[in-house]
Length: 448
Ligand code: PHE
Image (spheres, rainbow, N blue to C red):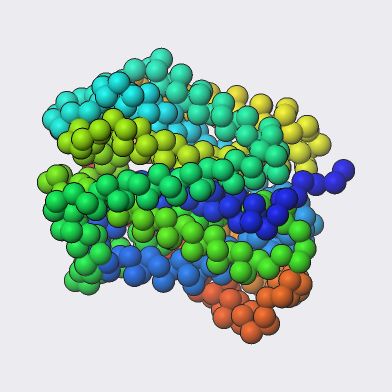
């Protein structure tokens, strides 16, 4: 059976960028940057993305294309032995992430609906917080929105690599960009916005700590969709002859560029209204409505903003589901539709538990952590780094020759192989191990 392929290089780049650009870029990046010394964090983040991030993205894509198989099949075909375990871990990671990523995706749908009559728009922080908590405590609504978001994701994946994912990305990525520009212009033309730009960009190098570098590393991996089999899988749909290094550079430039724009979209407006960027969901679902409440025609901007978040989340959730579907098709010969439907049913069940874990089931915790936090921690702080270290060792030490041959196939200059391999073989395993160690230290801290 012949495997699916992307229809064009542009389609591939937009799909990969669609996976990368998601809640990480639009939601996490602005507040992590704001809370980490602004410009200083930005510089470190950029440097990581353009060196380590680039090397690993190319590596993942090249492994995928070399084997022309799913995340598990890649390891089976290129080496065998125990290596396929890495692929299984990646597939499992995607499954677990889907359950909470789609819950948050559901929130974005809910907030689009809530924005329409202007119902959430008030500048009273207490009311906004109460609204958000109220929503997290509505079991039925949470399920409805989770199902809606997951259903859309499912529909796209059933549409296939080219007809579904590529087409979606080709429309949504430009749409996302346009929405973003409109919101940035609106934010920057508010009186006092310059203060926010300064807050975002002015580097405070006194805040640079090891901790911050590790945060930047973790965010970069999450944002670039590395360590979960996504770029492996997407790479396996790329035709020979496409320059993977150049394509990855595009994907990274688009992702980093969007993160930067997201910062400009969110922070100046927030500071202009005297609000402070808070950690986590608060920023998006509590603080942003306060911003819109004070804008003329705020409902319109509010809808635009949550649509933008939805688009960003959707092209990412689709990539997570595709990893699993590709695995089920290639390894078990399932049909695409069957694979996609079964997977979706399974992760939605888990997703329901996850979304209730912050509301109705709040009382059930382990070490003070609810299910959402546990899955978030397990996947992003443990599984993702472990998978990526294994991928780096596999690529740099076990199948190095094969990887290099794959890259040379498409016009990547031999000159680039050396620095790339230094990153893959030596720097990646060490730096990623830092994320891991840091995560473990966090986990062992007394619950608070
Ligand atoms: N890169 C996506 C984002 O920034 C998140 C993501 C992670 C998507 C892992 C797929 C897989 O939101």
